[in-house]
Length: 414
Ligand SMILES: Nc1nc2c(c(=O)[nH]1)N[C@H]1C(S)=C(S)[C@@H](COP(=O)(O)O)O[C@H]1N2
Ligand SMILES: [Mo]
Image (cartoon, rainbow, N blue to C red; front, side, top):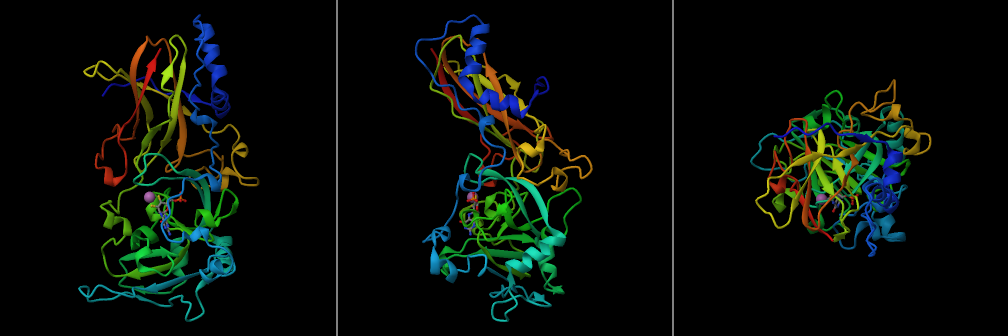
């Protein structure tokens, strides 16, 4: 593998400036002495112009159900127990244990609607006073080649909720689902191993029951009142409108996603995504390019891009390091009011600085500027290189373990 020069970090302010794009483009064009083309071509909207935290209603939505749970209103919403007052979480043993497994799971104290001891929101918030965790996480679907959004999520680790149920025996996995119109066909279920739920490695982020996003109560649109969030996984493990957790001795992952040919244990991928480019770029003008990059389970070393002439298929790819968005100089500029980075997992609790950059399971922008391109057709691609020096789409070219193909954008310099 070639080793390009180390990436240069741009401050957020520089990114925002670059985001007000044409001005920057024009300035570079002026420096290079080129005559601006008569035809006005709008520069690509640069990634840095995106807010660091995606507003709750601006996430790309991936939801099943008819009617969609977040379209319910009034009495239907109350009947669905999806208001803060009516929300309940049941934690039980497997109602349909696999007959092939002789020992069945048991719980010291199941939490059920029937027994009147299901967990309600005030009890969960009370648990949060002692055990709350917060962290930044990008939501990304295993099957969609673009991040859905990034949030500051807050809630209670799943292990703390499970401890409410007393002694457990013969539990190897934990299944959970959300509201699905009481229709088995609409069930969207996911699962974790017992160890994944209970034993968070130091420095890692726990599976948790989220009740806040970006400093606000978790909205119905994003899966509130309470949603599961699995930091290291794709979106399908982060079940919205959470209502039921089941402990079982069935050792198999029975995620709904597994039935659709997806790898149910695939972790979030390190991957770069390219913003759209205009179809035509005037010769002599510098063209800003960029996109987003998610730091997945294998971490991120750098983002690289490659530009090839569209008419020269055999041309060797040359990969050039792009610039990564730097951590905000002042986190107060991007975090909800009153939240200090010292409280957020993944940051040093003393200094408030991120322990890694980008933070694992979060996303940042990357950018570069193309200059001096001769007229002709081009193809641009971008890739992430992880901390094992594996360049996308390695080490996992199996797309059903998480979409990780190289994106290509074609354009013409005129
Ligand atoms: N109850 C429920 N939870 C769900 C889903 C769903 O259809 N129903 N979709 C999952 C999938 S596949 C993804 S990618 C994420 C998307 O989260 P978002 O809509 O908040 O962006 O939610 C997950 N949680
Ligand atoms: Mo998804």
